[in-house]
Image (tube, rainbow, N blue to C red; front, side, top):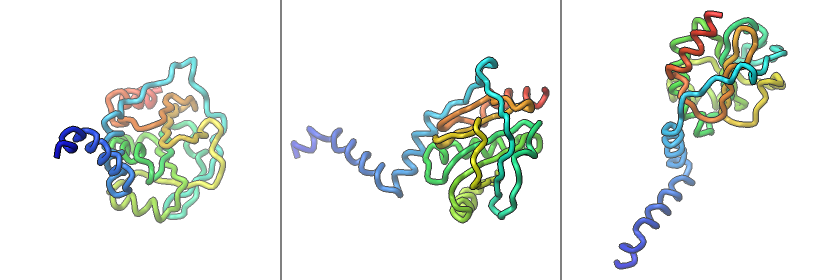
Length: 186
């Protein structure tokens, strides 16, 4: 009994660590902590912004309908590269859904996952998300190439990458709304 009293905090830490490695408990715990640290993304300074030179990118929606990203040239665009198995991705999805709900008629949204459509559709249905999800076999445009999940880009009508956020963020923040509203006014 003395051993337990002396080592209680160590045992609690070990239990928490063990829970993180069990998929059924690990994912919700990781999502929770990612939501705690998800802050509003900030704009890239104008002189540091890059411009998307090539919009030629073939993507396919979950129904198998192909489209080319070129249809969004000249529009304000949000591109989110994500995966269903990624805790930071899952953590930011509720704020992404709220952002989509607000701007779906004025901003082009591309939620791009490299997973198979059935896996994505199960996730979308389970969570009740309605934002447009795409898969791609094509190479990403150079300016949108990433190896981090999630990565989100906000692109102006002129093709400037105004936001480039790696990791979970609060996308339904006042700052993001102000940025999108300003970009839509340009």
